[in-house]
Length: 327
Image 1 (cartoon, rainbow, N blue to C red):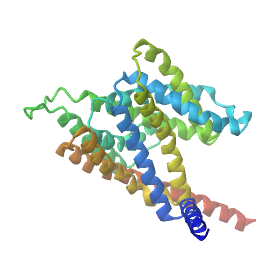
Image 2 (image 1 turned 60 degrees about the vertical axis):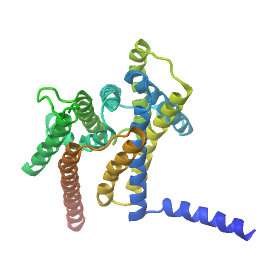
Image 3 (image 1 turned 90 degrees about the vertical axis):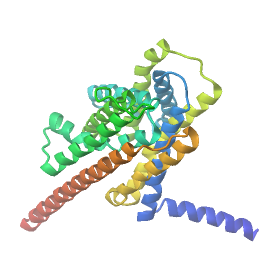
Image 4 (image 1 turned 90 degrees about the horizontal axis):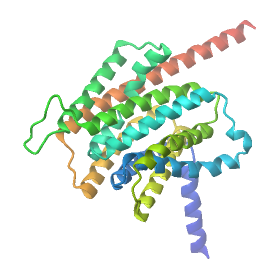
């Protein structure tokens, strides 16, 4: 009896620790997010059906997972305010996922992971174009250096067996991943405009549901037979996609995201190990060089953005204090 109580108490203790606020809890959740991100890419590489069909199934299973959550919150959770912005974000997000999944099938896992780190870099130039947000020279330099890292990976990923590469023939898989990263960044900008007026769960549900509808017709045009094992992989991929956001939200709730941001780059180590064990892929020197350019650039962008938010918060708090003192 006492042994059962000890085991039960231990389980409750672990659960309590995981769900408590704290720096190490934040690290735990961000590492979990990295694991699920790598799992999704790995599972896609294990499936041999067309990329558009994979996109459809990933969105289909994601929709099935999110629908009960939305139903449990009542009819009001299905209401959306800005239908036009929802349409644009779904169209852009669908394009991003389709490009990403196509690129995954043609690129080594470490290179895929490294390029995913470049997504935040493209938010700055796109925010300037669409929102008029200006950036200092340090941020612009970070974007340029990070983009150079992607180009290095795209150039040397295309090396043939003789060790030569064609300057005018960058690796198509990397180019699709690059296009996906740009579209994901554009989707993030739209999300930032909508998150203040729409619930997070409805944003996520309509993204998956709308992308599933966008993918349905192209998927039918290239439809191939799907084995039960492939369906299982795709189901896990859909669960993993939803789990990434959940883990990131838990990490944000546990501690300041700025203090744990560097730990998400553990995903590169995970991808190197998984890539070698499952696909017999060895990370290229060019990918490591690209990572050495992209990761510091992304960290600098995150640092400048967080510093800007803190300054704005300080100014707002000072203004509130001044008004209160005046009264």
